[in-house]
Figure (cartoon, rainbow, N blue to C red):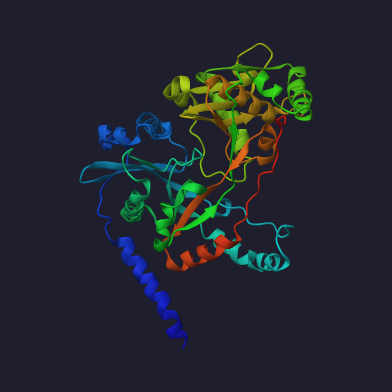
Length: 424
């Protein structure tokens, strides 16, 4: 009887395996470096897409690669020419930090769900420990947003996902000598744009909602940070002035733009490491030469803004910094680093967020994307959540079944519903 019950599942697994190995009908070129692919064809596909698909940026990452990350690329074509460009990364990831386990007690869960959550915790912890291995990422671990697949302007985006699945299968199978990749991860698909990637459910992929990307809409009427402050309701404006701006000014710190080069770049990297090493999730570590290379490659689209003690721009005077990068119709409040000084605890992080708001306003973009972490302070800035998903698949069918069940127990922090602006 048990054997009869298991047969449909076996047939489903075999069908999935055959489908995964069936060619998609597209022509696919896979490369270890961006220079190995036809630059004209790559540019034709990514034209008008995010700067993070650009060859200059990707080549820069190859020169100053993040620790434990190796790039791969693919160009997908049909009979008429290139239709999609794919950015991939191999990463050595500690699976226990891919997704924090849910807390034992959560007021939003009903009693039955809490009981199941508690009883499944040991199994989920053991499963997470199994994930200390190579992961093939479709996307860019250094960014937030859909920087995995760029589709040519005249191509229906949903039509290329079977070819993307073939790319992922080819790359994973081609590199078995370097170590098995347990998980394949497609990164940062906006929840409203998941119809295309959802085609991969039949191949064992499962979507997981992550912490949202916090996005601040920038009013075109704002010309300066002072205009932004004036748009806030009085209690929020007073809090910014009295609890963030005033303490920084009183401590003798000033906000100034700088160029990360030489010793100043080394200081910025040290400040970044101070924050990075205290983070619960560290899938990569930036190269010591990354900030200088980013400034040189991005040019006018990037701004490094620092908190300096006194009037000096020496490395020793730099106490914190934030990177703001314009990417099409939005800016990213990107990398950050800071350390407390002899004055005692100061709101350095919050002051740097406001510096990024000022830089984004000066860049004249419609929105500022702050990423996933620290949802509460970003919501007090006026940022709203943009729901994102990652799509996962494990090479072992039994683990895919576990992933399917674990998706139902995946929890993440919800962004507070805060409106700091004056009522219209």
